[in-house]
Length: 255
Length: 255
Image 1 (cartoon, rainbow over the protein chains, first blue to last red):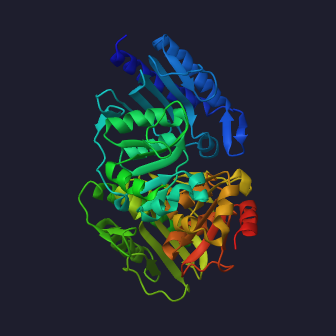
Image 2 (cartoon, one colour):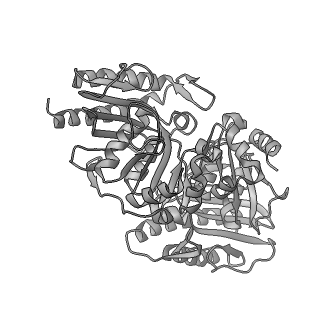
Image 3 (cartoon, helix red, strand yellow):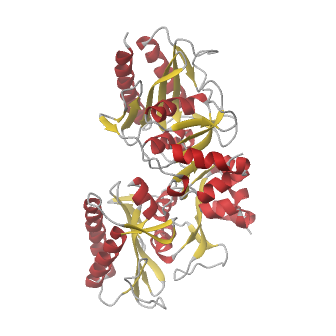
């Protein structure tokens, strides 16, 4: 199957899962603690992942799948087609706020970020694109954000990192025009690709990062590891996603 | 005029200003720095304030008006009817994000928080109520938030306070279920009255605080000064707006 045909079918799947999630929220579901009281998982996370993985296997049977809740494959390399799936990103917001969460899927081909999909479920907005075709909100193409510097940008920085103050992040926060925290990597990626924030600095797991990295790179934004110089989408990284100028300014400050 | 009639006319005014603001955003406007590069004011702030004050004087000619951009009265006491007006709350978001800002009006009668109005312009939601009638989103009455403790709550804490770490706020942030920052007191007040966050701790000026304080008290939430014990709506305060249990937990930690 052509990549563009896979893209169209995954877009349809994202709308399908959006409707299923809205419907599912009207019914009761279980909420469990995962690693701590700050890290939740619900029945909806698990059901969404099972459904997405099943449908992605129908769309592209030879692809491998990396996914958050454990229904994917044990992927050791990015050879061939690899889907990376986050069935509910921002589960805490999903449970506590019934908004500000996302569903994300990405397709990497031989390690190359190829297509990204971020569904803002409550606003009914699918941010998608890649592979040289641009980035779209539903059917409307969006422009690359202005290349603002740190002084003229709002920043999102991971809460734990802010509280601990590692990597000199407080100086980054002081110099930015303002600090924001939304509690969902998907929502925060949407904010950086639309220019509503100039930079996003956080510890990201593969499913947090994969879709946003496709969209950010497609728009000429920088995606850079702070601990290491190159970002490995198979492991957890401290990642900056930002305009070129914000990247330069932040890299001068962080350590 | 009866208070309930004033209430109805101010509600109509809030919808009027919402439509004017949406229209105005389609045209060009000036953005100026106020106290620093982190503090903006636009033509829309000023036009909104002039319009709101003019209309409020028609509704209630004997009332005094406290407002952010300087078109109000020099109010020294809260005797009689006092309107408190924020023509654009979250001006940085208004300019950079075109969302996540609010327009707020409050009516205090002889110092008593009486009616509050918070318009989420982009979502077309007017949060309003007070005077024993309850709190409403548009026409739908909302329930008081569950009395969760800090451990089970998301918190919003002022960015500057978080970066500086004063009052032991980082320990509050560590114990909370998560930390959020939206950059608009109006939006953050909406989040606390709907239970999407359990507590909001920030330095607030009269126009940041007045409307949210009415709605929060109407729902049985606590509004408490951290520096002083009672909140003075005529001056700037470090204020906690929270559930009773979050208040107890936070007061044990802050200093």
